[in-house]
Image (cartoon, rainbow over all chains, first blue to last red; front, side, top):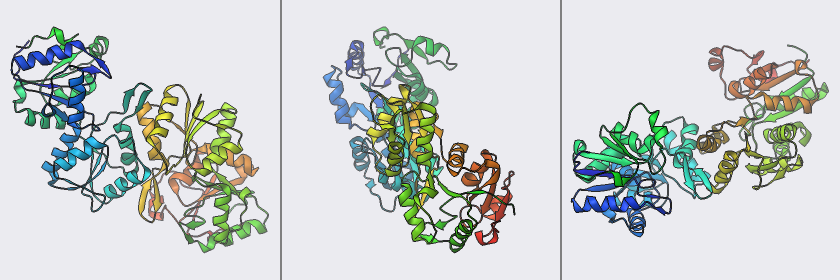
Length: 255
Length: 255
């Protein structure tokens, strides 16, 4: 164990599993609060607003406010502002992405587009995809909130944003910049919001390919908890190990 | 010049350019009719029915009946019947594909799906993509009418079926079987319909990557006409040349 001054924490598989509580999660967050350690939930889910995410966590007994939630939509909006200023942004996405772009002061439009952003959109249409392709062929920057190819649901694995993004990638031949985990962009943005130096922060998650790789790509310590995607057997074959790995968040002593 | 007993002929770029007539095309087809040579128009357009295609050709002064049109939707329906019998087929596509599947006696359904087919669908929805992904993860065969990544329109290049297909390919990790040009499947099917042996038939088209490669992949003679996609300069860098290349169909003597 090491004394970390800040925690970046994944949600699904780490704080809960779909609609199922992970009991140790609530105890873990309670300990962070008792020690007055800053924490931020970092999620690749672009469709929900921070309020929707916080409401779900509270309903699962995990103490949270909107201020503890950092979505890939917020990271994307912040990234656009830093790299392109108040750009004309065409988005394919849902509420969470739209709110994040507007809150950042960006103009959401399909005219004179500087930046195209794709996030999961369950109301996707051929017309939206067409506008995105035309704008990118016309020189617009191409961003995508995350590269997840599938979303677990009770019906099975449905198309994720990474697969929707491939329509525009394949049609235009232009590779998007992905913002979410495992990219370091979302981690760098989250650290700014958390306000704790990288060396003093740990990234906590259940998914080696996204959560842990995001931490590794950002050069920070990582804590893998085997309550979700990545099993011990799967971890055994990975060359770059997380700094720490545990079976349950109950096994972690918050110093 | 060689005496061919049958002609497979591309449409856009060869018989017309979008809504623009190619004058030599009508004279060329007239000569085939005078010599009583069988010909079949072979198109990667899956959205139109043979009647719609024939109507457009007639309106451009090119003598045609429905029987002269072979679409990739017809090739796909025939391929399913040959490989899977009267399979339960889930389709993403437009009129031309639906009509072809039904005419082939296949059951178009989203239940107990044996085969998933994707063709261009300008009413594509997340739900259709979800059903396709779930069926393929459940073991259904994955076909796609064609791999064209972009469609030329007056607005610019819009997403083609190859790019829509990538959603399901990327999400499931399953590679589809493509039916249309440059695959040899559509050519083999077309030759059956034409009723002329491969060695006596020539594939005529303007696009090296699709029309000519389809002929080459099917081991048949090819005739490239520089009235559409592929310029002389582009052809010069290709290693495998078409059997013949000409500037205009007027330069071809029908023997």
